[in-house]
Image 1: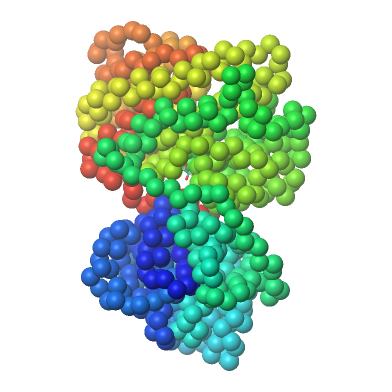
Image 2 (image 1 turned 135 degrees about the vertical axis):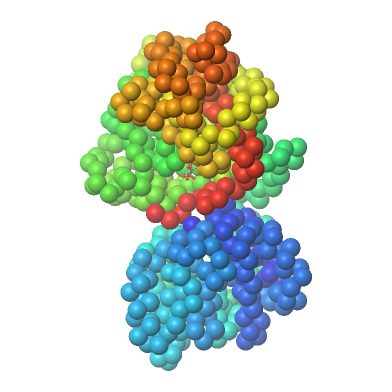
Length: 608
Ligand code: F6R
């Protein structure tokens, strides 16, 4: 993961790089570091913690007074080596003349380290990155110029990487390279900006070049950029103007972004309606598919996006009767899955940068499948590699846990399912579903009014160490998502299961210290789900029941329950998800967690 920024221009490099890093913090927030060049001096500052803490420290230290218009910066999500100052980027060559920041993983770094140690190099960090500046130095030491040395170094690296390098040997130049990890160059009036994504640079420029894999560039303020492939052949430099605008978001009126984003969900549905629906149904740009184009759908995604995909499978198979598989992207290509040109791939990714999803999509593209992306990020890697992208239009999501973007993914998948069903079956009553869909925003609003009840419920349960989340049918993917939300922001162990599976083994774990959140839809095997809940109660397990059935329960049978607003059959996930998000949120708050930036996580997962 990690975010990298670099700049060669005429302004204050420190300011540019700090602003860029601020925007890239979603890629990792373990530690942060900057190296600036002035004359033949490189000055570096590092901090374990957030970019904003780093910024406030800098105003008091030497970096602030160091005038520089060229440098590199990095925000880290630790892969190799613990979270400490030594492992924080930038990393240096032994002669201290070369500084490098890196996003990705150098898979053969141990081999390269041994090679360099034999040449007399020493290593000071546990990172894979430190081999890079030392390899460059090893080539320079043989008399090569820097460009040659950089090229020779790139040839030796295996894995995924985006690199930015500055040196005191050629102090005005930045050297950058990309292989599998994203890197974009921005340009404005002879100044060059580099970052892991274009959004980090929108404040400074709107002409961009998204680097292709296995290319490198040398950039210097006021000079023509030089771009090459790894074989050393020069590559056409083609900048394009983007219509993207800088996203300014704040969590005004809310304690955290996560709570704000949960509360934005009625608006998210309204945005999707105005973007993709008209009075007469779907706008033509929603899904450009010829139904003869494909025979099977394969959904590729990770994490919450995968859970959304499971809901999509249910709807697509039920309504449109098209066989649909949902695949965990990180596992997909490993088994050489059978793919045909007639398979349609739906790749779901909020960020559009998840390395596992991108790699699975690359595999599908190599089999000539058509790719439809569901994504929140225009000009992301996934967007650029897909035949069509259906954007979530959910607005920027700051909280690391997916909330409003999960709901938006679910909404888009629901619309895809009814759209496909309508195209396939004349008798499919699409009007009924569309008319219900337009009411969903109000239903979510109504569900949000349960906030104080869910807050006190969450506080009652926050001290438990384990939870089951259970449901059947559409409630099963919701159960997994509810468990994931609780795990990632509260650090409580939680497991989502189909409720019918409990009796096949997992019920052995039940005792008075292992509560279960049971999701029971009025219109879908309610009685069976309730019986399963009672089986848990019979074993002294605590049961919290979320249902849309209007009945009361004796506390002898169910410990706590909440009756949610009713919606049309098969549309229940739109309200149930909100209550699960709130439950996780308030449990985490009770435990004093940082819900927006939970430990060990990053918003965009750019390593496989
Ligand atoms: C959980 C969460 C993650 C992401 C996963 C995929 O709240 O946010 O599980 O869903 O990392 O990310 P995207 O959707 O960006 O591919």
